[in-house]
Length: 180
Ligand SMILES: [Zn+2]
Image (cartoon, rainbow, N blue to C red; front, side):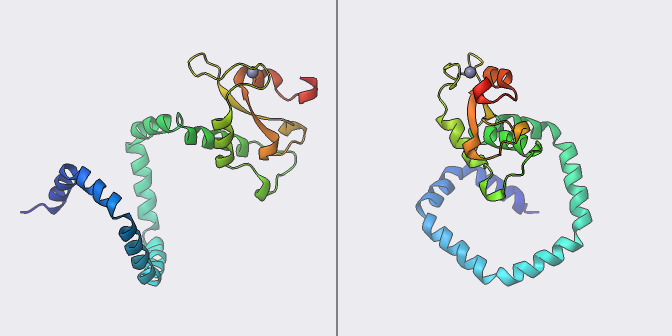
């Protein structure tokens, strides 16, 4: 029997570069095609998704549970790799912020985003306190600090965040800039 799937897989493997090149040179066409397709199938997709979602809820749950169980190591490896990238660092730091309870709730539109954190991390060259230049190699790590600490009513805004070296951040703890 002709194995369509295996054939497709093999084809994809051997024609990877060609396909990449095609996507590059035909970018506009592909996008406009996708847009057209999406528009034409919008309503159908909507109702299908809703019905499908309800009907397969339990299946999907079981499947993702099983997937998580069997791909644990792979996921951990991927996670580790991701958290070494700038995007990963930013989302990790944002997660730490949002898990912490603020005394004063920061309005959503003022709250720092992972994009803001990425920018801060990207711009930071040296620690504003000890003036040491950040270096993974020398273990002078970047860490996100609230200028007015959360425990003293500081907000989760970009203006209230700065990048300190880890050592300074730990010794600053919940002190204010002025008594640090
Ligand atoms: Zn420092």
